[in-house]
Amino acid sequence: MRLVIQRVRSASVKVNDSIVSEISSGLLILAGIEEADSSEDIDWLVKKVCQLRIFNDLEGVMNLSIQDIDGEMIVVSQFTLHASTKKGNRPSYIRAARPETAIPLYEQLISEFTETLGKPIGTGIFGAHMDVSLVNDGPVTIIMDSKAPF
Image (tube, rainbow, N blue to C red; front, side, top):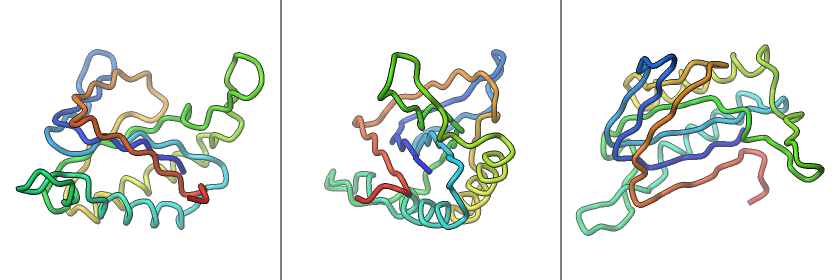
């Protein structure tokens, strides 16, 4: 599973000109799910993201987690995070999970973030065309991949 984690001052998701999620300070997370992903990937990522110290403390040092600041979160499914661009000019999405695999994992990811943070989190709508807006704070953008060796 691949996540693009963006520290934001604000973020929102619109579908058909209607806002489906909106937050102030917190994280906007784009989640790419691949066929090989499992509950173990979700467990590791949720723990890591919720403890990631990327928010400023009183001295302006990135030393606080989303839990420390009681921040908000939006998680949006984005299969294009698994695009392969090695050959040709049209990306291949062969590694991206099909909906029958991806939807339950996406729902589990949302559920575990909700449980860990102790509050509801915003989401996009799986498979919908979405307009995602954000004010990236910093900017701070981190990519995490549960399958990456680093």
